[in-house]
Image (cartoon, rainbow, N blue to C red; front, side, top):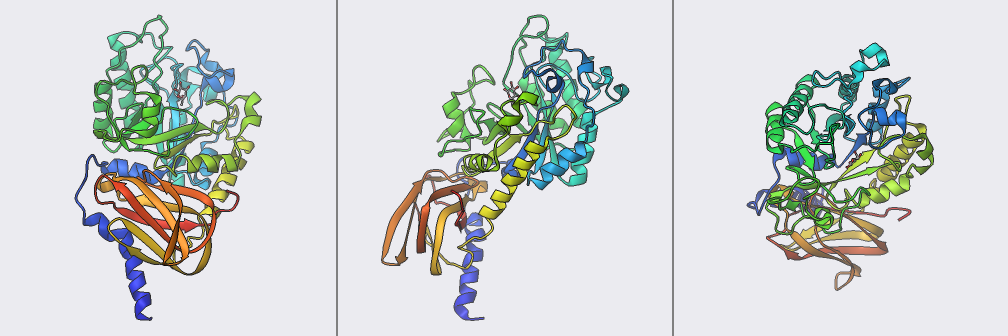
Length: 446
Ligand code: FUL
């Protein structure tokens, strides 16, 4: 092997490892659980329950439990499709606002046990946890604090009920990766509103499963992005100030949640939740609203490509299966992603770095319309602004595009260029930038 080849291999290896370990932390940093969460990037949401059968989005809590009657439920199908789509896990609505529990909870009288489904012996959580385990994907739970059924809702007793419910779930079904708290807080069956004891909810959840990341408008670990369209702002700080704010009413402005706080005191990553269909629950009349693979890829670029995670809702139908239209769209989405990122044109490039820039030198011109950058976020998020320029000789670089934050991953697309040299220059950073990955692609159909 020629010397210069060995040197360039070493340089390429160095770009992935050295700078990350040679820097001290700057500002808030993620926990190891949050780092693992960032790496998941894409996973599925599943809204399933009485609403699936009543055509409602928000059940009243007074529904007859017998309405819940999936005729051919197969959680293995859910997990298989999730895995095949590249999703790293499934978050299930174990309990939505109607209070119906998809497992036979001791703390409720409105559960699968009260239904005729499987003669009251069914347990969706058990089926799903076994299926996820089999497929090697992870599982998360949505447990709505708002409960339109529970007789204790609106009284301090309900906080105990909720804590017991969490405990029951977190001790009965293996490890979960995420706990999802919705911000909606309406009236319960008695017309009363609940004052939630979120501090105790959080403490007891983490006591059962310390590896959990907890999602809500304001974390503590993962935040809502202020919209349900799946689109994160191009500028996305994983930082958020939470003092004085609440979940639901009283949360920071949607725009703040969408971009984070530049100087936020806490590391709270952004999770973009969006449904593959119009509604969160399955409605037969919405079969024609299923997003195409191309639309999903666009949302991926605007969520994962902006440093957040994508939580894509794929609601099972009345049979208890993912509908063929949804599964086809998911596979198209997977194929588009695989194709888009199959050939990193910088793989064989010589990489040169200075404190504030990285250059990729290729041996011949390539077509390029996408770059992927990563920041060593374990040492804190730093880059405020960068420029991308390139050319065909080293004396003359022209600016191609620019970007702001990078974070876990930044995917930047631009009109196709033919070039041999590319330079990423960090023009503003809170501390020395740590760029851990630079990849280049020529994605078709952009
Ligand atoms: C919202 C809920 O009210 C919807 O029903 C749905 O669960 C969505 C993901 O969060 O706030």
